[in-house]
Amino acid sequence: MLNALSLYLHYLRVSVRSQMQYRASFIMLSISQLMATGIEFLSITILFARFGTFEGWTLPEVALFYGMVNVGFSFSDAAARGFDLFGNMVKSGDFDRLLLRPRSTALQLASQELTLRRVGRFSQGLAVLIWGAATLPIRWTAAKVVLMIASILGGTCLFYGLIVLQATLAFWTTESLEIVNSVTYGGVQTVQYPLAVYQRWFQRFFIYIIPLACVNYFPVLVILGRDDPLGSPMLLRWVAPVAGLLFLVGALQVWKLGVRHYTSTGS
Amino acid sequence: MKAYRAIISARFRMFLQYRAAAIAGVGTQLFFGLVLIMIYEAFYRSSSAPKPMSYPQVVTYVWLGQAFLAMLPWYTDYEIYGLIRTGAVAYELLRPVDLYAFWYCRILASRSASTLLRAVPIFLIAGLFLGLRPPPTLASAAAWALAMLGALLLGCSISVLTMLSLLWTTSGLGITQLVSTVVLVLSGMSVPLPLFPDWARPILDVLPFRGLVDVPFRLYNGSLPPEEVLPLFLQQLAWTAGLVLLGRWLLGRGMRRLVVQGG
Image (cartoon, rainbow over all chains, first blue to last red):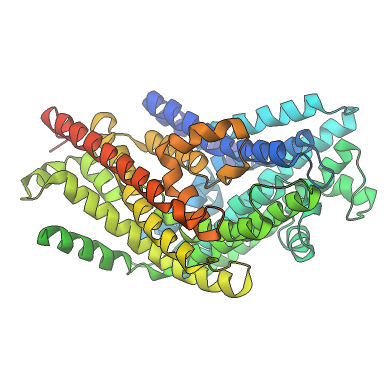
């Protein structure tokens, strides 16, 4: 276990060093990612300016939902690059090489790259989060801070799990499917607004099937000190972020199933 | 002329081969459309003040956006990108065709093929079940068709410009992404332009990006009257001509100082 961790860190150091060889390109890509993801919040601001209210939610409140999900997603987006590109690996048959090495395939893929340019999404998400938190009259307690960090990390785990599942599909389809982007990028887009404004079936989808509400909507309500229009119990709102971790563990089990099913394309 | 027709039809047929990717793309786009519509629905529920665009018009606008997403100049032609990076662009210079027109035609074909693949199913599904309405009058439909042609020509001229930036930077992914961000916001793709603050409207109206999304979509949903199409179409054409001239000039300069990469 300890050995795996140190190997993981070593790989990441190598990846960081190699990206730093192209410093100008890294800076350019980070800035452009910052702007590309930042327009989301710009759109929200424009809509708030035009309509004034949003079902009783204010712009700084939405900023909190937005900031937390974007920060959480940026971590997994940076760390899951290996799984992201996994489809190509199956197609070219390169996955065979990973199977020959005396370490788990998940570890090898996870340590393939730490995509530094995701700092673009991370920094704009963090800036919006800080602005929202500073503008709102929140009574911060240690427990709330812990809950916030736990939900961000829970979000990271959940998105990581989704990307692992997307990669797992490639064992059967030899192609990574764009449709999963609906629940990763689309999920980010969805939960950056409070879940209560959506239609019933849609809320259920993001609570029970892809539990994004558990790492964003429920804990943010606790932090805001607001009642839930959906009527969730208080205890659930505190423990909900664990769902992200459970989702990741489940996804890795499915991954193992996929590996067992793997037949090389043989090229 | 025959050569360019051949280029367009060959690229077109190539793109029609990627049907599975298109089906997956349609699913994703339906999902994004549904999310956007629910958000607009909540905003329209919250405030009863008069709006520059009605809720059913916005629903139609959102679905048009999903259907014609691939037409926006925000994907670059990665093959030409590869040619420039590897230095194979030198071969392009040997072809007995005008290079600018050649690249423009390639982009035109891939844009229209991938748009067609996605637009038809989204139109069907959203039109039957999800609130996409037909244009209010026949005149609106005709005005829309004309403006779509203008939008396509304009979009391709912007794409060629982004691609030409590769002649100077070689790693142009950053620039491509920046251009696509600017296009998404200023064209009205991310938020319809009438919903922008009123002080921004005069600026948005003179920029070329409006011709890509705002003009055709609002002619379609009736928020722009069809008789306004002529000046708007001329504006699209004028910007296209300007950007083509700029592109030709840049290409000429780029080719004179071109150092072919690698061997």
